[in-house]
Image (cartoon, rainbow, N blue to C red; front, side):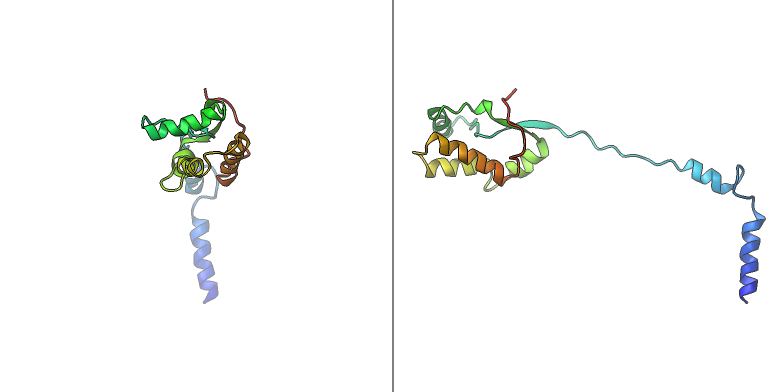
Length: 138
């Protein structure tokens, strides 16, 4: 029985054209070109280490004044992040970067300037962005 099976397989393979220029095998493999799907290039933004507090409410002004009192020019301290990381990790809902700054400022109204900078560094550590170069907002 195994000899008959072997003979049938040999007949099937040997009866067609050899693997060469005119074989179906060669035409199929040459026609199958790999397709590369390119991901769009990520969009980058500049994230302020010391929160900008852009709101027009009196509450936002209190936080802006806090940094101003300490001589912190918030536009001098930014890092470059992907927009996705910025929106979905740094500023996701809940206890995010802005909320943590507000909580810290509220809990430390008499903080020294050194403590303000240290907390900015702590946030960078906590969010894993402490390895990124810091530069001015452009």
